[in-house]
Length: 335
Image (cartoon, rainbow, N blue to C red; front, side):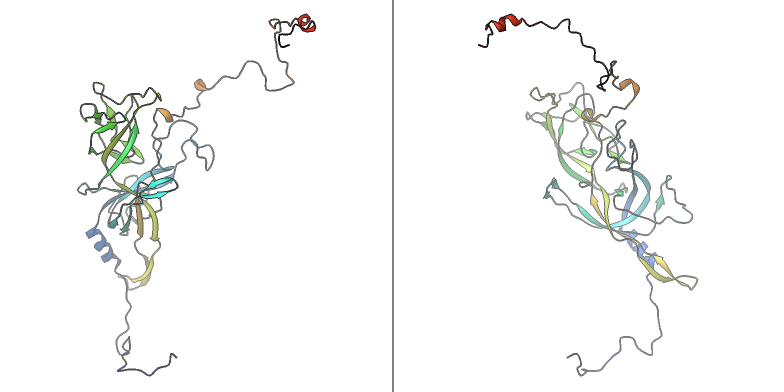
């Protein structure tokens, strides 16, 4: 039974003689606490790319190679904010599509940007509040923060163009080794192009450029394609917003004017490193979509053979006549 005799002296939770109070979160102090422990992130907002589409929801690019779109999105810098990354795990899991690396982190956010991008449309004098969405891209923009991570990869050699890795290479950790166990030295056989960064989904440097006076893997005579070579390198990690466990957080706060009104608190985000979402048209020789210009279109045939009611010109003067006399006399070679 729930009815029991009390034990000891009974003390009320709220003293009847104490003055009545209302508690509020100090959102400004919460922002200061987060920014004092955090690092700077550059926020790139995602927007569906309409480039090359003739209809809504179309997947194929009909006219030319689109190298500024990543994951089907266009990314534009919104601003820089200071946030605290509480953890950053890395592991490999086997799925139906292959081996994936979730590399999830949790991001404790402030409410406002530290500085806005010049391309940001919102007014800096009224509101610089941060609005995240799943799919947005985040870079650690603090130059003093070490955010380099290692990656290994196999690449097929392509002559006459820069060989692009999955991510922009900042520094190689080992020599390049091809399928014949031949090693290649940086500075002698190849070089890493300058400007190792990603802006708006477009790679600005960080590729492998084979030197004309050096050795290279070459073409495999059995396949007619470039030989495979392996690399291990460091690249600058960046993240995508995967989920927002706390997006709309509204609480009543008593302001300086003495009015208790609702105010919006900061978001809380779960971010994942680029392994899951990386997908970009690299524009290599095997992936060139030719534009539909008049000079490249195939000309229609001179004679119309699409409709059966049109006469078909057939010249039978060159058709060899069959001598039926030999067949009638039983001289057929099949007998």
